[in-house]
Every structure is written in C-alpha cells, then in structure tokens.
Length: 174
Image (cartoon, rainbow, N blue to C red):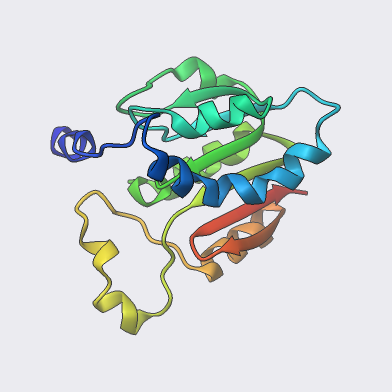
C-alpha cells in the first residue's frame, strides 16, 4: 500500500490546474441534466476516491451539490460511508479497486433510490488491444472494465447505464 500511495503522490492534480478541471469536465458535463432536473431538491454527493485534492467535489459544490469526500489514502473518513447519496462520483479511481465486487457493492449501498453513479475510467475494448494497452502497465491499475462489464452490473443491480464519452459511464439506479 505504501508503494501505491507513493505513486499517487506523484500526481499533480490540484485546484489551480485548468487542464485538470477541463479533464474533469468530461464527467461533469453529462451530469448537468441530472443536476438541473434535481434543482428543487438539495442533492447530496460523494466523491469516492477523491485523491489529495478533491477538485471534482469542489466543482460540484459550485453547482449546488452538498459534497462529501472519501479516499483510502487522502480522506479516510468512514463516517461518510454511513449515509445515502444522490450522486456518487468515481473518477479515475475504479481501476484502483483491489476488491471491485466489494467496492461496487458499497457504492450501490450508498446510493439513494434514483441516484446516479458517475464513473470515469479507460475501458477495455477487446482482448487483442488489451495486450498492448498502456493503461494496464500502471502498477496501481488493478481492475479493468469494458462496456459489457458495466452493462452486466446495470442489469444485475437495477441500473440504467449510458456511455456519454469514451471513458465516462453514468449509472442511474432504477
């Protein structure tokens, strides 16, 4: 775990980095219709795997979402894992799940009815491309997902799934 954290500490994602905020806009933009449709309600959100600088949580706060953060290295706040959320974001984090079934089950349990999970991760296209895929070579990337994986989870766990961008997945609880 210490080697893993040392790798994360090399990331330079911070609030002042306009490029990073633009990158996060890839997940924030498709969330806008959900946020707009919920204006009459105070939304509660969780940025799961927020890293050392919870930039996306801050961006969602500016849009009126009351955000909490959780990260096993940088924001280990177990009390936030005892609440329900209307929106859960998991950007560039799901590929770091060592026990993806357990973490997915937790996210599912934390999500309120009709809630939305927004995931950003590179997806596996096929076996042939996986062999030469640079993304799998990051030692901290231990779980990989395809569209079929997310469609399976949606079917099994009662979600509607959409893929608004090549590395963005929205899963809305039915």
